[in-house]
Length: 287
Image (cartoon, rainbow, N blue to C red; front, side, top):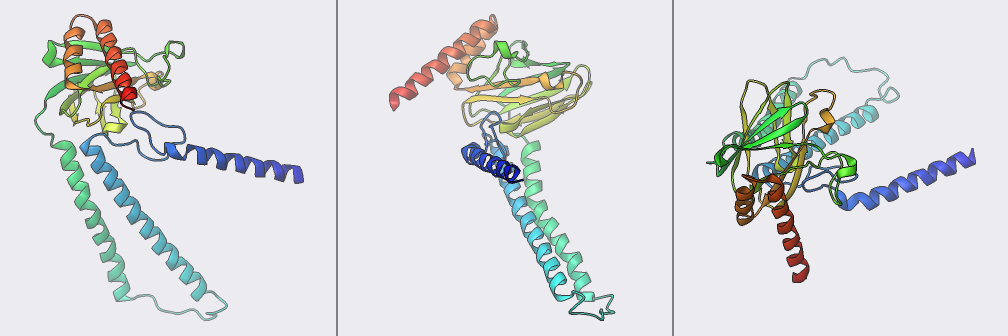
């Protein structure tokens, strides 16, 4: 018995130590983090607004829960049987009934205002600087650049033995879609077989890919880097093996990549690797 209790204590201590170690990884950028408990960091104006709305709702939820808890405690303490052996026969209270009708309505109105503002931002995109078309199919994504002569790439998930250092398992793909930083990107989304769902968490983007229908979303990434997403619809056997990768780069790097990608996608990827290595070297030198 003592041995079991000691093992339990050690297990709890180990769990607490793990949580303490994982605390800095509260939320990731571009991909999930170990022990992550929050939303991924926002790199677009819309998702930053969604973060604010989420925090606002959490505060309201906490206030409601604490208020209800306080009422329950008051009822349990004040109206317990030992203190009220003869219960009250009161069945109605006009002021109370008006209050519990009006207050929830006011709470919903307070929630509705930022909610409608966020919906307007999501579905009223500014003029696009770039358009890409994404087609979901079992089980990969096709990314098409209509403004670049229909440049098309098929993104296939890398297998564990194909991963390079730093590439996340089940999220990295063989080719990366590339967009310039601080540019409005319109994303047209559809599917060729069943319903899929295009999602990039750090962009705050999620839209269904429906066969025979062209849906649309947009984003404006304000930070360079690699951003991963995956199909968020149960689309079949290999649903979990359908990631998508978008790399956000400077405008000059994007121009070079696009010019190379029109004739050689592999060569264009090497240009990205060289640009990443150059930026890393510059960062180290600046320190």
